[in-house]
Length: 181
Image 1 (cartoon, rainbow, N blue to C red):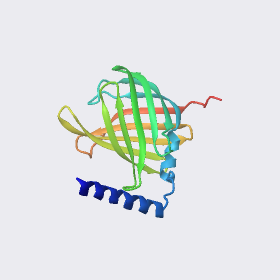
Image 2 (tube, rainbow, N blue to C red):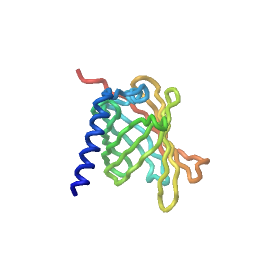
Image 3 (spheres, helix red, strand yellow):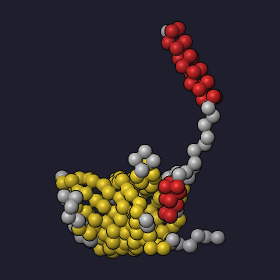
């Protein structure tokens, strides 16, 4: 027991000394992380869900409020709205990984759905892709958002069974509400 305690104390001292020799700078958000700032604000959304594997078709509307998570590296969004299956609430976050130079989305909603996707940014077009099982089948999903101005974007959700042939699942327009003064 004494050997274990001594070894732990030595390891702690070595780690502390290494840290003391090279003070770390507080991390700061990268340009790619700062680019997520486009989504910060309150968005009013209107669109149409197409009937199909995702459920009944019809009009969808809602709002989403996104803000920087402490530190400025990630964006956290809370949404609410209504559609063909009734009202819903959601929670999601957007982040960037420098390790694989990709954006990521993770979200849950009050209808029991959970989704995550890996994304890219090409100019003003954000594209997130994911895979999930629906009715026992693997379904590929592609969600594309195109910035049409600093305060608007259009979005398209597409689905595919083979990852080659895509069908439209939803189209939407989002407009950023003016910030309250």
